[in-house]
Image (cartoon, rainbow, N blue to C red):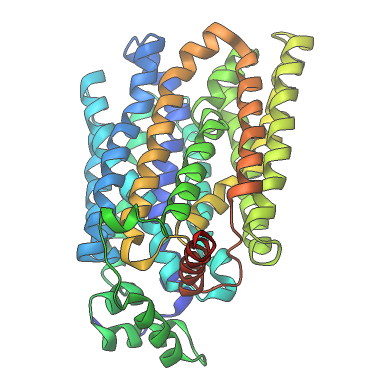
Length: 452
């Protein structure tokens, strides 16, 4: 289907799945305060309701990679949009905990699919010189979705059955995504891989005004030639460094504690001495901080590079987490402690927003070869959501048991993540996806030569 669309409209609508990802994962942080009392949930039940979306996300992420490699990025995102619509309406109309958990799992299928698909779709559309910024649109939309969720939570915090509106309003952007994807093009790299070169050339003409379209097309064709696909290729020696890096990025992004802030910030603020209404208001500050940080990351990622931003973020996040624990030890459960905690949470989330938030998803969309990009992204997304599930499910119980000492553990994990990035990560800025792929081939070839 050929439509002449402005390239920036394509990028923005392509990233809209990220907004739904952000809204549906962020909205529960405020809604759970009211769901807990309405449905009489204990700590474990609270963790199940919050984390049930992550069970679906793991399944959705696992399935989406293979589906997108076979049927295309665009069609698979459209399927995710339909599931978003069903999950949003079902969650808002749930009559008991069991129904809510089921619809949160359904919603998770779409969230997991979007997390795996949108970064790949954007990275395959964007030119190499500003691929970091354009791919970061995904994270920008995620954070915008989280901020919208926080604002909606605040707006309905004093309404009867307000949590139903909080959850159900996700239907509106879901429907917009579904309609918008009808008019967006397929990834040119997926089209070349599936021998639809004329369509790929047309899509590149929409996205690359004044550039060497034929040269880029030939480069894509050369990297596709003779490559295998599937699990055997993903675990082959030359792809293994990319898989190790991708799994490490996916794992550490969660175990440095980011989603404990996004899911449970109001709960922590209430425990620190704030009322529920003030706690929800505090999350808006967190949302603004991470949105500003993401904008800064989009501006700097193609100048400073991915690796440097990750290292800077690790340092700032770990220091912020240590200070959260110190503030709780010195001030206890007081108003000053509560507001200090909010400031430090904003500091933590700011450093996350300039580094591990956008850079993880940008790099995951870059490092895998075209032949297994969807599959590799699916594997890393499953690891990411599985880690997310473990953290979300256990955090309420661990917080009851250890208090703010828990944040010290996350800080130490941040130090380990720093060392992983320093010694295992590659720099991808300024390189085409094909050049990154050739680089992995060359590294393996050099190893073989040394062995000989």
